Length: 161
Image (cartoon, rainbow, N blue to C red; front, side, top):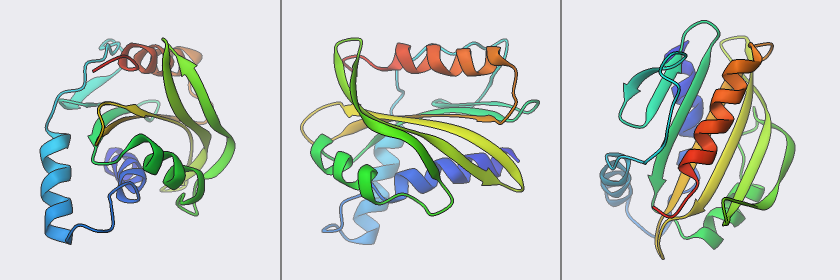
């Protein structure tokens, strides 16, 4: 299940990479950016670190993931507003300010291996050419403390990087 949740996170990343680059260039750049640690606080009583920017819970199923993506804020906004995976049902989306930073956000549900997952995605400008994408996912019906922990992690990540 952990692999399925991480794969779902990667679906969001797949549509944020610019089309002009060759596939090899895109993969190389994405891997370089994904290796950069995103500064965020995560409740390690609830989540176990799987990679430097990915934290998971097995019971209930939940993931916190952040990464730097090779996309301008405006391009990311356009793509996130209209290019979502078909299995992601949007319940709320838009743009708002958190911690003084303008962010694009999406909220909705999806399914991974038959399990319904609540998902929240935030994207904000890092510099002229990159954004930080934060994804929080939790199994529908998970204890509120997991949802609260995801929200607190998001707030801690959304800042000038």
